Length: 156
Image (cartoon, rainbow, N blue to C red; front, side):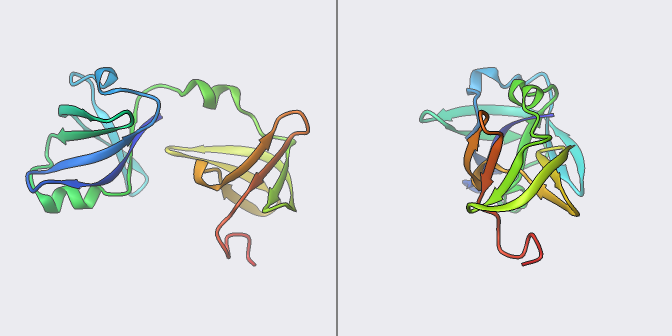
């Protein structure tokens, strides 16, 4: 699955949702193909009824089966995915890299777990989520990844 958007908030009372687009425009969202939103670890298909671009990186979407404010509010914070692999995900392999947390060594990345919508890294006994909001720096030359991880994630 490839993440194309994150649901930011509801829009209006008729089930519209405001999304932050990730590397796609509304013209690339095909109404004939489903998009997927994860519920309880499973991708649930929705068809896009309409997509209206709002600025460079946002859009208002209307999805089938999302008809009111309550339905839309349930989706806030979730990611929207489409079938297929992200080109970036195929090329990135952090195995063997050193993981830092705010500049302090955590350990060596021994593997990766492609959980839908959230790539995770194996470091010692930990499974660490690799989210773009956590990345402080990424240095392919020295194979060092520095993250700003939430307190308590590493058993602090």
